Length: 177
Image (cartoon, rainbow, N blue to C red; front, side, top):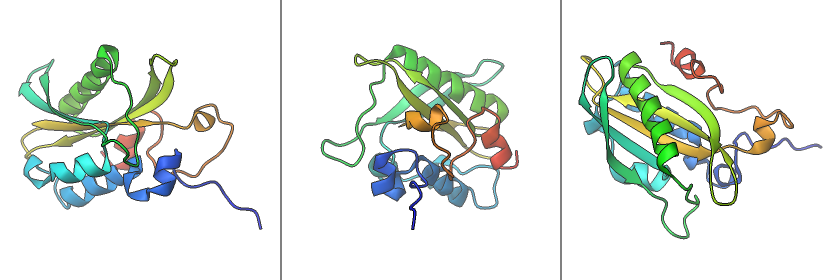
């Protein structure tokens, strides 16, 4: 009997399925229930910090064509925890904030992958950016940064992921938006 690779994109998620990037989408959908998006008051920051470290919570400071965003909270992984830290430099923060801005403008979730520069060389990462706020508009964006298995990115293995597609509009199709 041949075993299939795990339905996650990294070893951490295989050992701890609740920290898989797709699980944050499940939580977001659960919190939203029958609403367009969940409210920020629905979120337990302790759960986010424990399950999805390497995340940023962005607060919308002004609306308009180019919404203003500020980092409201950074969720770092605990030492010795199931997830290792991903180095976040200014370029990575700019990437995450630009995705957050897109979420505020469109009102829907966004997913994107890219190479993140590190001292040891670039690593493949993805960002899942999820909107929070009342029906009237987005007031917060939760952005989860995660490592992508390079074999998946390069197409060496065909893993059935419970993840959103790798294109920017794929996650919007996933949520029917």
